[in-house]
Image (cartoon, rainbow, N blue to C red):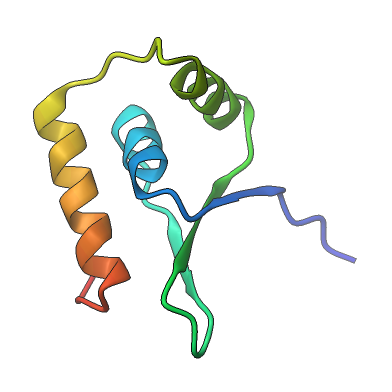
Length: 83
């Protein structure tokens, strides 16, 4: 049996862009047939958890330009655009 690392999943595009901006890592994008929402999946590690917690408290400060670029990319992927 292979130990697969735990994953953090969210449908929140802003949270996903925040994680991408802070880590530089791209999520897996999961689509369910017949569903409009996509799920963004990141490694569930200490860095991701710290970002999620800080985001939830409203205390996270990030570069706006990079965040906007990540959010725009995620939006295109959610709409079915090319990676």
